[in-house]
Image (cartoon, rainbow, N blue to C red; front, side):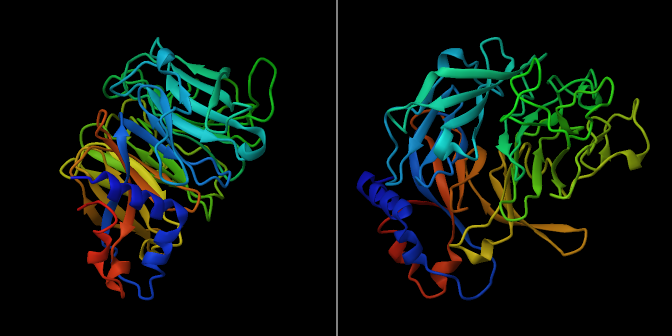
Length: 412
């Protein structure tokens, strides 16, 4: 049971920085002991958690039906939405408002981008501006439609958009849906479906609302969509960039047997083929029309459907509060609620450890400006919620864990 006054105090501690004083630095390394601390409930199907990078300390939370909410620096969920495009958004299942990305220069230009399903069920990537008189309110009339992608089926819409360390906007699109990619769209370089795209939103090419970066891997190749950065993806629901190294982690949702995490180093020139529908994870799925195994890139991590059914890609932890988490790639599964931490062995291998098993549908992870990690519970209003991921190991290093119960709610 959540107690409003206790939760309000927890919000204040969380967003004013006093939590850092309470937990302090971790002196000794050890296995993280994760718990979740409630940031806010009263949400309706939260699917995105992000920040504006403007020093405001705000969290921006997308609700799937087309509404963006703000949790301010004091931990308060603002009543007035930042943006409400529910009237032009098709929801729900795998459709809806699925992605938000703030321009790297948002603090000065006020521009942000959204990935949503329009009323026809097709994908729309649009740009909006914050209103001139209120930093907590977007100007709905400012929408500029950058890219529209027809969706042949209602599932596998992807959803993630994010700016890379190069300042370009990366867009995740699924294979168009149905089952087994029946038209083999993910391998078709003439189509945008089943791809990660990379576009320049600060410039324009003739006939476009954006420019094609000249370093994209298929620029000048006849019959190929030049926006493509990587391909062979089934449904890249969530991907993220390591804020320290710039490396890209892609959580690609599997078909019947395997979920996968793909890894693209920052040094990559792009053009990776992640194998779908020829491969699901590391296993052959449909070999019709496929090339030799050397034509494909393979995941760093997989798990079978005995452990879950739909991967929610996460983030590599680069925050300052929980040093036992530092450098771990934290990700989870929507169905089972399992949360893992993966580490690189210094060579070519990765290994994972289960860190927590929650009792809700885990829709997404997110970061705040400081690199602290959050996770969302996909539930309808009022039970949709966002939680801060906390390593309780810090309390065992000289702090009384019982003290935390007096000022915050936790989910074991």
